[in-house]
Image (cartoon, rainbow, N blue to C red):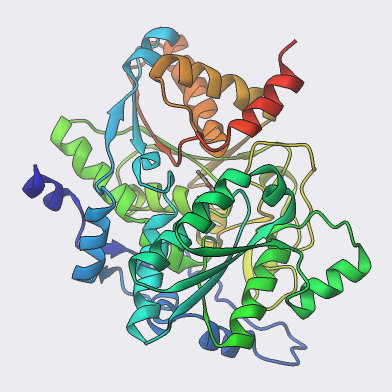
Length: 424
Ligand SMILES: Cc1ncc(COP(=O)(O)O)c(C=O)c1O
């Protein structure tokens, strides 16, 4: 029912920054900076996006036009109960998931692509630029740009460009222009290629190329994760989920999400944290990209070229290149500053799972619920299964809620690769 949907869709974005247990170390320029990265941000980010990045307001009004766009792409997304998974695990726990795979682009990424594109358009820009790994973010930007009649250019990590031709097709269907990064279109790309002509690309490199390209052409750069503003926009997920749980009369005990840069986790979990609902929060990363177990909490660059301001985060280092055969996603080298702080303060717990573990979890979930999860989201599912089994052992009727950040229908090559390598 239209009225009900509009009531569940929030009118404000929630910003956790003022509610953090400690002040968040601010983005800053490197000590010996020959140019100011913060000034550079002013040139490439839409002004309103930059303002929201640095705001300390707790709630920010969602423009009516953006709310309308959210309704058009099918928000609020469903909150579903994984009844059959509960039965298969024989657990007394109840398992719910917020299904962000229900948006047209198949993931949560559209939640911030839309407002960022809207704010770019509002200042008269007609072209937006970004990077993408697996293609989820690039797809979201290409659609958001099209919805506001803008052009889009997407720098896609070269290995994914080759392994994920279908994602490229969707971006091109939406009218996006897609390049395999490293490219010869930017000085940074040329430098990387000069050092290693067969460089497979990385998110950090693609990010740097997108930023440079936006700057040179006076286009706007849209940021997919890590920065506070992306998490702010994603807060529609958790706010909707709270209302949907209220309708069901449920109170969540355990909240779980996967972490690449931290945007779906933050968007889902932070509204619960802010409202003091839930006793345990679990952020799940990849064992193969071990930022939680092996990363340092320090000031680092979000991108490899060091064009963005440094932020204090848990990081493996800006030049980190993920293992090439690994197909599980979550390849980014750092975790958002707000999430990093909450982990360091012991408020959010972390887990890391290996590719064989997440593959098994994905298979079980697909068999139980019929939904093929994104490999990224399968990390969250593995933690859900472990918590549900723990509840069984302890005879506890826990309510577990997790964010299913995307579907995996365009990640079938990943599953194919995993099946070949992992099934005997
Ligand atoms: C479906 C899906 N889930 C999760 C992520 C991880 O990103 P983030 O931590 O910013 O949500 C991605 C990144 O591309 C994704 O496509």
